[in-house]
Image 1 (cartoon, one colour):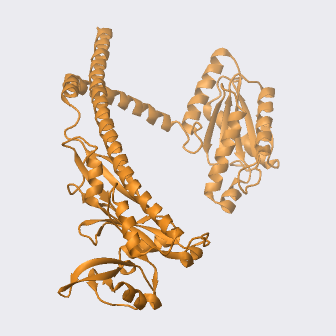
Image 2 (cartoon, rainbow, N blue to C red):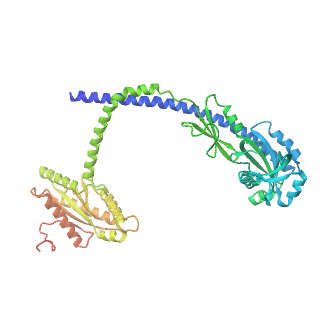
Image 3 (cartoon, rainbow, N blue to C red):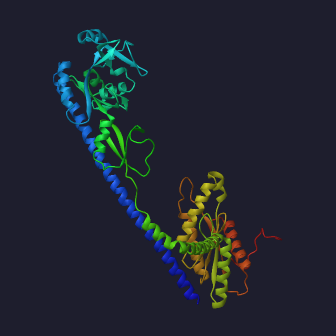
Length: 490
């Protein structure tokens, strides 16, 4: 009856586990397929947008190289070049911003019939200088009631100025954060530095001296988003993020979405794609429901098994020394009692070795208790190597250890004691500690069947103190006719 009961319990547990695992596997498989599809779509769209942007940035670099070869290109000639940059890609405008020193400003404004304007705290104002260097771009506006040309200093702009300086010092195309564009709308500017042809450009200082100006391009954020959205199926939620700011798409976080970076010049955007719906949960829920009733029973079984294992662990902890992992005094006395009983039954003899580290108190006093604990663990490892599997090794407390040797005669016990003392003596502790020694006391049992547990322990302890009194680092076997001078009543 009991066997059939346990067979039934095992069968129920297997059914419950199998149904839950099957449900999880089905869901994970469907969920993985869904996210893989979503991620593949995001990667494809990101590559599309990145390719479009890279094409335009590459054109800016080509225009900068052309201008570097002939630094006397006029603004009209550059406008012709600029129009060619807008044919393909995502550029919505291109401009040339020369480097104009403070002393050249008046001549530059007179030559082009403009007045260089500067931006301060978001407002376009008149002359706010003087500034040491200007990077003006020219555009038409209705200012003061009449149409006129204005030169806008990019270097005074809080968003564009730092990007220009990074481009100047790095020699590479650099993108601004999301900014209001001069031509309207929001987007980014990309600046490519132009240097004097043939000038040394090895260091930042070289590049600053050789700077002629910048080729700048404007990217409307909507055009960048369109390049990505065109590569996605209908009904997909799309966000375009830059600097943790949503530039295009719904506000807030899109849960469980795929996010892919898009590199534009030196700035990274993030394309976030969220497919509608999700993996079908019908089949996993059906499979899970089949195992719900059995899961409760399975849980009770696991609880029972866990409780049994916990009891075993508590029993192990009760018989084990926490510092060394050896048997503690309680377990030592149980092992000694069992070994002595076996010796009485089969008429064999055994031995008890007790050892104590010499001058261990000085270790704690000089180096601290952590160093003393480390030394105790090292000595425990030494003793493990010097004892047999059939021997019982224990730490009785402090620096005192005991070894029970079953089926052992006096000569064999003495050899073991001397080997242990030599092993302790030859051990080199970690850190600054010097080598230590041990005093070993030995007593035999089994020869007199009426010898008690307490007397065996007392005899081994007495022999150990005799070894200490003999000068330490000694091994002594208990003799029945010993009388210690410091014993009570002597």
